[in-house]
Length: 196
Image 1 (cartoon, rainbow, N blue to C red):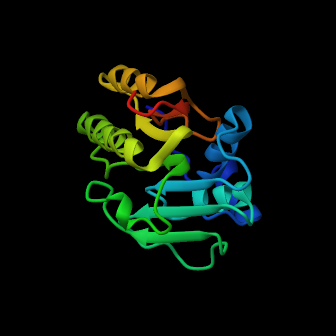
Image 2 (cartoon, rainbow, N blue to C red; image 1 turned 90 degrees about the vertical axis):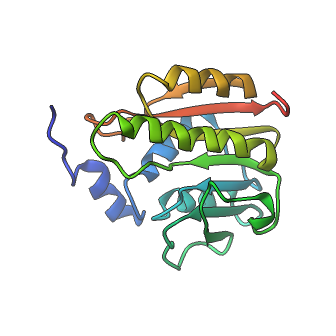
């Protein structure tokens, strides 16, 4: 098994460029390849702590857009004025809980389970991803876009199939900033089909 490197080039780059975590570069690469977020968009980010995806999304939507983050853990203050972060459980979340209401143009999720280092990590990740897809019908506008983290394993294909039924184009994508030893992959969907 490969040894995990904690302070790699992306960690150092994030510190240098003012991002709260190295995960910012995953979203930046997804955006570069897939163009999910446009200026003026409303973006919902589930599992937003520590806030690096909120930072990237705020840069991309600009001053006319809005970004709402949701996490069990509080996000430190000092983010762009277009960002609102709330403490909430994605499994108990309803659209009425979201500042500004819905729909959103883009649904992001970098949620991950507390890992135990065994097979249960994968299945807990699948539960989180299916919850994101459950929420999509309530919070995402027709034609909206998705990027969500999943841990690969036996149930991943089923998840990708379900997501593929909800989006015009849906694929798995592994950004370069993902650690070599990680099983994470991002499900990226474009063109949400309501009732799909």
